[in-house]
View 1 (tube, rainbow, N blue to C red):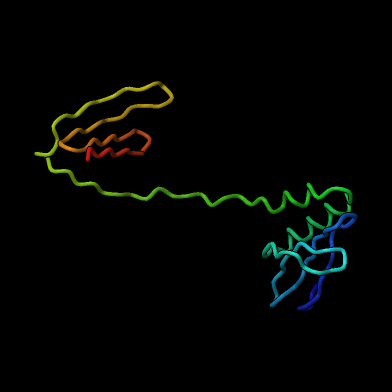
View 2 (view 1 turned 90 degrees about the vertical axis):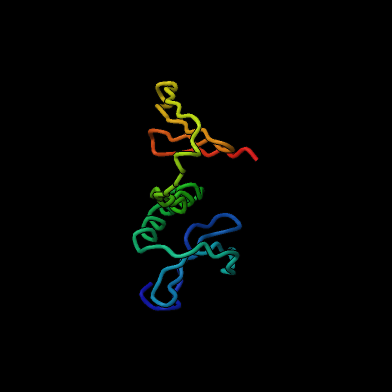
Length: 131
């Protein structure tokens, strides 16, 4: 599959197979019918993933379970975004230190006229507005 436009069908035995194609130097995988008609494009894959698909289909031709697991990619890890909240001292009516269940941790609650702000020790916060 070195040339652009080349394709390889993997799987089979049922109504659908996977087809790997090389387009613009990149490998793409598609869900295809037995006659080679592409039903749905599943996206781009790496050379390593394509080799794993071939090996998986060679081991077990009756099931797509192993092949499908290759498409369950890890979700991106989200980084916390720092936010600044400015509250004037004269707006704060009460500061409460809360100790919750051991698993939940501790928090500080700032109550003011029309709002309540809970700052948790895990870095999270909750804001309630009394409208």
